[in-house]
Image (cartoon, rainbow, N blue to C red):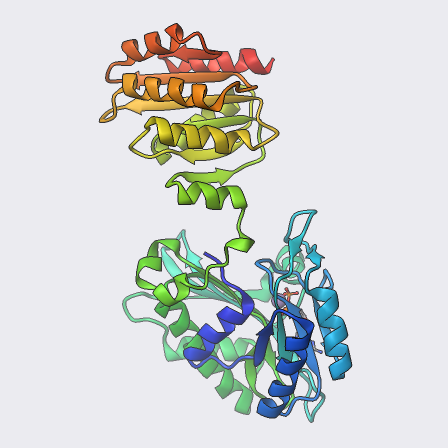
Length: 396
Ligand code: GDP
Ligand code: MN
């Protein structure tokens, strides 16, 4: 689960990570109030207005702007609030901005120059260990750095039995070219950041940029935080930060109905019980010349109600040209599922695309008969090969 930058920063701060301070607002008037309060708190005379959406690259899309007066705060926040922000990480349509973070300007000129670093914490699945990735080349073009000059990106793996070690934090600060006060600050920063990652069951932290300010502080200017959804049961405060407006509406609806659903961009909808079978079914669709339009696991109880909900969700997708139902009847009996499919079909009315139903397992023969006798536009199959051949036929 992803959270917004302002929520991520609050969370990091509670672990002692130094951040660029800010206040969230959902109207231009509140943005001006937020700017005044920030000046009282931090003494800042300029502010950055930052669109809050679950996607990066906001700076490039015009979603991060500097305001040098309260009038500019009002003007810029009215531009950004309500806009469809398109960034290199969103779809063509972009994402609607509901809130802005009014943040203190931290790039003020001083004795020494500011520097932007990159830092992320994530799980290295190959080694099974968390690692800290970092680079001197922070800022808005880290993807380009990774592509063209990958030797400028370093990583430090953390041994889970001993945790982050002092020498590792110092090595990071050293490799980032720091010395004196900013070196000490970076060591503290890395420690606090890793404690936060560990403490909130995160699956990804990306802090880009980490800024060395002109007075040698090290602070998080941006923060992208993803939390392992399987840990939300014990991270209630974070679970409450969920913003469903940022999620695919069909996926939210499916989730509420207890269906595991992921929208994809192919032409064959699928409805399956069990995640492993769902993935195998998606392979079969691909081999048969189609492309899966979704991943959908109806779970253990493939009853009429759930099947109907699943059909309705799949049919919302205009790209769907056929639907493949692939259910293995182990505990659930195939004839029950077949009856559920027939009932669901009748409830929905005329379904405009061909449906291929493959039921295998307990009472598979009876199930096939129920489908065949229903008189509906549903092809039945017991063997997966038959179902695959049917897909080829209907797509041809
Ligand atoms: P992203 O584009 O979605 O990654 O958003 P960021 O939070 O990283 O902001 C984009 C860019 O805005 C940063 O790389 C900075 O260069 C710039 N920026 C962020 N905060 C400030 C600030 O306080 N003052 C100034 N002048 N620029 C800032
Ligand atoms: Mn950034």
